[in-house]
Length: 476
Image (cartoon, rainbow, N blue to C red; front, side, top):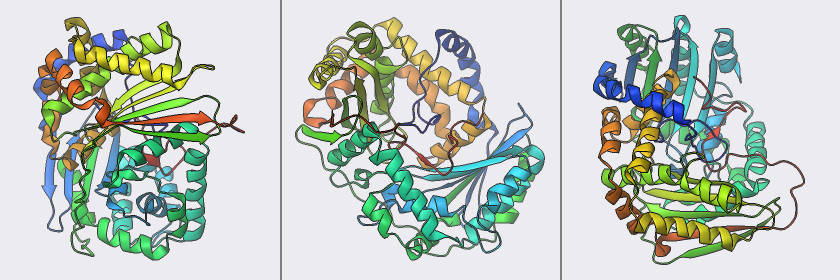
């Protein structure tokens, strides 16, 4: 379940639920499924094309305001990678009315906090604030959509260049992930990292950013989501008044038409990099949400393999064989385009990569050849569904879920999440593992240390890239 993204340290992942938490969560599932997260959502589409979703949630006297733009690194082109992320930074560098960083200062003075993040598929700007001051972010976000005028372009680009250096170039595990993904995609723009290639970032200009904003930061390409302790009709009117007059500056953004050709053979790469320990990354091409029957089966396969310390990979590779210090399986069904099913692992000292690769292959073969037992399958379903239900305790995560699903086909699809997880069978998991997790569909990356790291590495290149140091997924 990936609408609830709780960290930006590597790939977004949030599976660490205790058995007690899962048990409590399961008790709430039937009631949550019947009520439906989307029942109270009010939706409007303004004449300028802006989509608005508003949901009352009276659990706490707070509100969150999100502006999602349907633009991420997949909308870039060769030679201009990293532009989406750089533009995210520049959105905090002033407008025709506000000085640099004045946006954030006003939010803080109103008792709120703000941030933003960029992914391969979209960019999100958000504020969490006392319900009495929700009008403040509404007006400020409308202003920087309509009156973008950043100051200090060169210095902010230097910040991004340094971020690239710290989070990727000096981080061996994320550098491996980046290199493996680039090897896995030869046609689709998922080929390049969200933060962009260093040479491309260095060549970006203010004109690039202004032109990009004119095309992608328009009402017709945005979704506004407000969730919190307020009157929905009143907030809807506030949003209409602030965003309704904004005109689109350009024609609708061009669609991403690149289709990744089917992989026809195993691909290997070795990355030589200063590192404390060797590591491996394995990526298999898989479908996204558009193929629902396969997507939910893959989601549960990742849960069976890596859903906490009782999962197969942790028990086998960490506890029993003591091959690795960390192992994960990750899949994001909400990606806009067909995506990857990832295995990542960092070896213990003295362990050779081939031993870990062999152990991973054995776990995949076990999943393909032997049906998951009824108890293990139900545990995985409980974990997925409990994560989904507990996400609704946070206005921030509710807004995230609504925004993401609206972008991939409609927010009402959220009500099908629990029933779709319920429908997955052991045979479905076997089927998708046999179909997709096969050698001819694999890209394997191996990190070969060339020496110890001179200093602690950063992190985060593989997942969403945040504007501010604080983790964007931390609000509750």
